[in-house]
Each structure stands twice: as C-alpha cells, then as structure tokens.
Image (tube, rainbow over all chains, first blue to last red; front, side, top):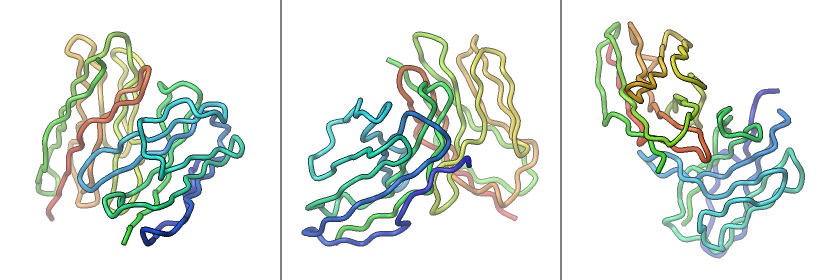
Length: 113
Length: 109
C-alpha cells in the first residue's frame, strides 16, 4: 500500500459546526503532516507529527486541533471556522527524514459557509 | 535560510513542444530535491526526486538533473502532451520541506 487516504473528499460546514478530517497511511511512515492549500498557492505547513507526537505547530489558530491516535492515523478537528478557512487540506506522510520526500493524499476540499 | 525559487507561470505550450521549468535553491547543506505535480482538483503526486549532486531522474518522459554547481534542478520534457497540463512544484527537503510557488502548465492541442 503506497497511498495516503483522506476522507471526506469534500466538506461543507457552517461556522458553528464541529467536523473532523481523517487521514490514513499504511506505509510504516513515522511522520505525518497537515497542509493547507489556497487556490493558486503552494501548500502551507500546519502541523507535523513525528512518532505520534506533535513536533511542529506553525502558529495555527486553535480552531484547528490535530490528533494522532496511532502511527497510521491523523485527524484534524475543526470548530468555529471562518469563511477564509475554506481551502484544500492535504495530509502527507514520510519516513522519519524529510529527505525521502512526502506522499500526499488527494485532499479534502473544505468550504465554510 | 533554505528556500527554492521557481519559474513564474503560467506556461502555455503547443502539444509536442519542449518544456523547461526552472528551479533554483538555496541551502546551507546538501538537500534532497523534488518535483511534484498537481492535476486539477487533486493532491500532489511525487514526479521526480534526487538526493545528491549530479543525480539524474526520469519519469513519464520528464527529466531532471541535480546540479550543485548552479544550485539548480530544472524540469524538462522533450514533447509535452495535453495530459501534462497541471501545476508543477519544485521542493527542497532538508531540515524542513520547502515548496516553490508552483508553475501552471497549459498544453494546447
């Protein structure tokens, strides 16, 4: 299995809703990442988990809450989002060194209304 | 700090034309370099990578050479197809992962 699987593919949520994005990989990768991508821009790093521990939080607002229940799963919990949070959210994984490159999921297209 | 600088787009070519997308990097050490491709509505796919100077890579007709002397990692393809229309990102992996700004390629029949 050489894939990163993200669900759902599309999500529309209101500003008072709580929702979660899910990411799963079975490649034995020990680092997992959340990225946010706005239209016509490169992905921006949000969070890094290394060996199931949060190692980097790029000053992301607390309305985004990551969780890594085990080495194969990564969640992003969303609460009280703003319309400007609408974007493509990408999950990625890698072996424990960034020099090996990332494997990306196909993303969740989030729309906040 | 470490960074990549990528050619601005969009790039519009006719089918079977030659493609070059320029990418240069700045790094204090010896980074690994990558090209990712993003088709409309999709995530990023790894297209090519090189882990050391003078490495060459090829995939789906695309070629790259990691040139340490010019700190470059240009993407080339001898004959583009309409199906190559996508956004291409150069990336550097060292202590962190850095993306270029992306280059949109439009290939017309």
